[in-house]
Length: 212
Image (tube, rainbow, N blue to C red):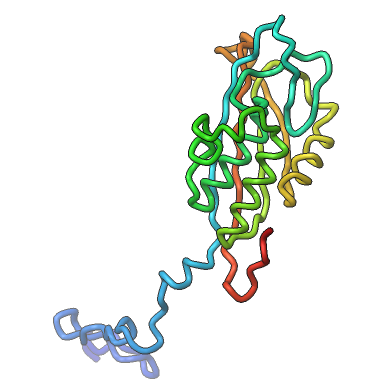
């Protein structure tokens, strides 16, 4: 038996043909047809996410401005300056909701050009933002928001803040806080910053609730 015949053991498959003789792979499975998935149509029902931020400087210590934060009042703390009540936490939540739903941002909805919102509470703004998002055909999955600053110390009231924010948005809101280890304008207690993310999902017309 010569060397060439020993390459194939009885019962084995025949040797593969050289590359030059191999049949071209079939592409029929990639061809478009009646069952082709319309990705654009599917995307209409995918969840959408948004990011929101807000920052306010502290009011002057002798201004008597009360502190409104995370839809709560904070007795004994100097408040934040702003067109409304300066609630950076509630405002960041609003901004994230508008971003997720493609409805602009905080300024385009509640900016200084809208005098009816001057002095409005964070609770009122968050409730209205959630209403507009639902009116646009979305439901809110959840919101997560983080406060960044040195004061006030909020750990003891974080659960209370989450509840107040959730009630205002009629949706689950989780609240937490951190500091910058005394770095930057936040570390110098010149102001507060909040960052939020929101998840919303579009509803088919047939199941959209009637929003008052």
